[in-house]
Each structure stands twice: as structure tokens, then as C-alpha cells.
Image (tube, rainbow, N blue to C red; front, side, top):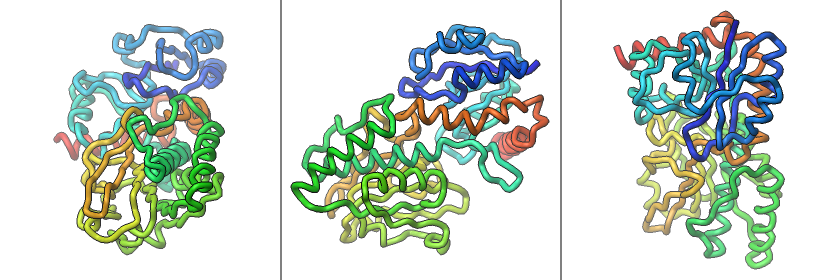
Length: 358
């Protein structure tokens, strides 16, 4: 019998889950065992899972579970321990990110398997599960909030959204800020979104269109000849929604910052600062909800970069429900790698282990 173990997350700022109480009930009804660890951060309470019939376990107890158990989580684990189970999560270890070798070595030492959620794909190579839309929405919101605070000379460490919020609350906060700003200055930001037609880009476009802010939408057609792109400098806010890959070239570089520019805020939703494929090679570390932006001092004035690598956690309930809707069918059909998406994900894992560690 397939047995999924929903572990707790080790990050203090992670409130999402790949499996909600109702989703767990669906798995149970299909004859699949579900164990759920207690968690102080998860947006759904442990009592909600208990009421659905799930087994309840202490946080972190997955380590002593049967090796046939499939450990389900979202974000990466401590990369000092050997991993002997099969894990489903976002590991951020396939694009030469910082500590990626350590993460992969944990699996090699323990004999475990990683089914990276970023690499669950259909036959055409398209991802079947993603938080992208909510990442784009939240990333655009954070970038706009920073821009408004800068314009109103109110930018500081408290320029951030409340956590465990939702789309309606975010739009209300930004509408109030825009109303005050436009009343006093009568202007709106000029925004460019690169990767505008993908999941992430559509989420960013939703945020701006909901606030009646027009955007310059770029995708493959506009970027296929490679960067960098001087047009970015003529905008106020640049939202990067392109997933980094070996084919990626920088969209903007440090040399461009010496030129005359209007640009003052970059929201790097893709957030791959530790990867050599990073399309925004202006910073080396992600930001956080607590400290949402870096400040780069240039001759043309400060440039603010926000790059939070778990943006959908800002809307944990909505984003979890949407992600589970995409994932649940594949969990139901797991059955020892027989389903195509799991087989392909394992092939990527096996290939990467050989390429990086052998």
C-alpha cells in the first residue's frame, strides 16, 4: 500500500502545504495511507487532518518511518543528513545553486530518491505542478509596494506585507497606497514583465491589471535574440518571471547600472541568485519576507531588488489549494513510479546524480 508522510517544514516563513485536509481525505478514500506531522506554521491545523482520518505524528519523526514511506514536503531539508527515503519536494539542486552538491550528496549517501516538484513534467516537457501564478502575483505586489514606499519617501525595513494574507487583502493595501500616491503625484509606474505569458507572468499581470496599471509584456518573441536589454532601464519596475536554464542570458548587468535610467525596482520572481544561469546577476543572495529587498548604490541612484524564494507562502491558503489541485491526481496514481511524471522525475534525478557527483 502506498503511504504518504506529510512532513513539517523547517523554514519559519513557510506556511504552505502540498496536501490539504480535504486532499488527504481523497487519498484515504482511494486506499492510500496518510500520516501528517504536527506543524506550528502550516496554514491548516493538525485537527483538520485528524478529523479526516489521518495518522498524526510528531514534527520531524519521518526520519524513523519505514523506508518504503514516501515523504511529502515543499521546501528543501537540512543538507547535513543522509536521506534514505523517497522524497517529493522542491530541492533547488539541479541548476548548480549554492549547496546543491550537498543536497544531492545527502541522497547519494542515504540511497534515497528525489522527485523534485519542479521537474514533474508531461510528455512535452511542460511542468504539471507549479505555484507560479501565485509567485508572480505576490512578487509583483512586493515590487509595487517597494516602489510606492520609495516614491513616498517611506521605504524602510517595515515595507512588507502581512504574512498569511490573500489576494483581496493585498489588492486593498496596494489600492490604498496607489490612491494616496496618485492624489499627490498623478503618476503610475511604468512596468515591464519578462516571461509575461507563462504561469508566473500571468500572475504578475493579474496583479497590475487589477490595479489598472498597464504593463509592457515581453516573452520569447522579444527576448529570443538574447540580452541584456536596455529597454528595461526605461521602466520603473522590472518583474522577472523567466525560469533560469542553461540557455539563459542576463537580461540586465552591472555595466548597465552606470547608464541613465528610470528603473528603480527589480522583482526577481524566478530568484536564482546562486545559479550560473541567473538572468539578474546583480545580487548573490535571496531576500526574505522579513528583509524584502537589497539596495544597490549606483551613480544613478539606489536600485532596489526583491528576490524572495518562497513568494506563494504570502498567500498560503489560496496557493496551497491551487497547487494541490494540480498535484493530487499524480499522488493518487503514484504506484511505485508507474506513472509517467514520476518516472521522468526520477530519470532527471538519476542523471543529475551521475553528472554532478560521479
